[in-house]
Length: 305
Image (tube, rainbow, N blue to C red):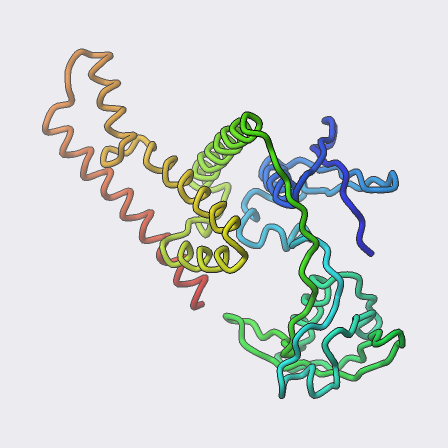
């Protein structure tokens, strides 16, 4: 059953209204990195606490929201287009069927149903389950055995059908001044978060797997574009801010390094000698090459591993 979220905030602080799912995702990301619990205020006066303080900083990777348990907005567990010859078609599932249960597990959300399908595999072999679905007002039982496919090094289940209906969308609008302020505020928050993650990776508190290169960027650019023009612009903005922060790092070959040269000259009244300039340039290039190599390795591992 869908429950509307009214407010959310760090436990111990005042909760704030959450106007969009992206606002909630951003709050959960910061809470996981800070090791703080989040208190949710739900419609009907109900409250819930997400114990994100139990998530280690090193676990804050691309699977963070899977570990939290909130992957996306609520959508009903409906069966969409069914592919001929797939497991769903063989079992007799039809477009519009509402899935109520898989085996003994009640299904309340399309994301939960997708996860149940993924894990319907044991020792590399598909496990048959009886699905209970509602079709045209009547409940029926459908025996189904998923197809197995390889996902990297794991074997997962697939049914050959679109699972879930599109989520309900609302338009969030801000006035010119409020929108400008919100944009500046989010840019600052993303910049600080990027610096903190880089710092944690340097001292070993965060995984180097969080570094991404051009292959991952291209992959996510395509995925964001498929979600719509707005999501694509949001992705481009995030990449722009991240690259801006990287360019301002105090590495000699970057703009941040040149700013350090100017600061040194302003303090000492002398420019950096040619000998030191050459040493620093080589060191900066070496650091960038290491970062690029790690990012490219992560890209290849993530996409083809």
